[in-house]
Image: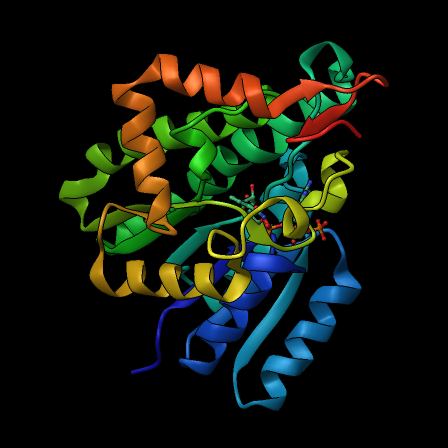
Amino acid sequence: MSKPVVLITGASSGIGAETARLLGRRGFRLALTARRIERLKALVEEIRSEGGTASSFQADISKLPQVKDMVHQVGEKYGNIGILINNAGMGRLQWLDELDPLRDISYQIAVNLTGTIHVTRLVLPTMLDCGQGQIITVSSAAAWVAPPTYSIYTASKFGVKGFSESLRREVQNQGIHVGMIYPGPVATEFDQHAGVSWETEKTTPSWMLLEAEDVAQAIYRLIKTKKRRIILPWPIWVAVWGNMLFPRLGDWVFSRFFKRGEDSSMIWGERR
Ligand SMILES: NC(=O)c1ccc[n+]([C@@H]2O[C@H](COP(=O)([O-])OP(=O)(O)OC[C@H]3O[C@@H](n4cnc5c(N)ncnc54)[C@H](OP(=O)(O)O)[C@@H]3O)[C@@H](O)[C@H]2O)c1
């Protein structure tokens, strides 16, 4: 019996690409989607050269017609999607008044939240027909502890958390598992697109900084164990409980570390 087909959104870099490599080695058949098709094609070649099965499907997840086409094409090529990994996402991390209403705010919600909802809704019917399937969504530790300058990103990641928790209860009796991954900082291209000048490697203690492969391993664990959620790395749990039990302390810590610089942009710990 061949392993299920896995659709991974945001597979052209970072967590999505590492998850594709890992699942490709484990024998899953992969449908990889993102906008940067050349990157996807190169990844498909890499996975095939190691004996895996993968294909690329270009789509901008913020555009519903493209999402519909993509899901249709995956169905045509592979048949039923057994596992959906909602990973595509981006952040624009600036003070709210500095965010552009369309480019930064609406677009961020369209990619991280609405896009995730549309892909899930289009993939769900065949899972319901089959009476089985897994939907795994990559949220963020920011869905538990909301830092300044993450307002829209956090809204989108709280959003997918609420969406997935409700959906889990909606489909749990139909044989479908809905799981969530909440990573802390990960060394990927994420910061390059986020509009901040600090670098994760410089500002996050090394014991806290994850590699994309750590998150890929957590996704694989979630597929195998069908747990509801994985929050990683473990110190994030301390922040989650600390934030819940001592919100005033949380406010104080963030007010110390996130300040506007003279040029009004974000700083972490020191003036830029
Ligand atoms: N890095 C972190 O610190 C961190 C922490 C917690 C959670 N996360 C979450 O992890 C997920 C993966 O991020 P990453 O860290 O691996 O960053 P990344 O390397 O920048 O990867 C982001 C992926 O999302 C895709 N994407 C972005 N906009 C898209 C759009 N409009 N349509 C389709 N695909 C789009 C990108 O592909 P194209 O550009 O080719 O379209 C890329 O493949 C995101 O949901 C992110 O919010 C990241």
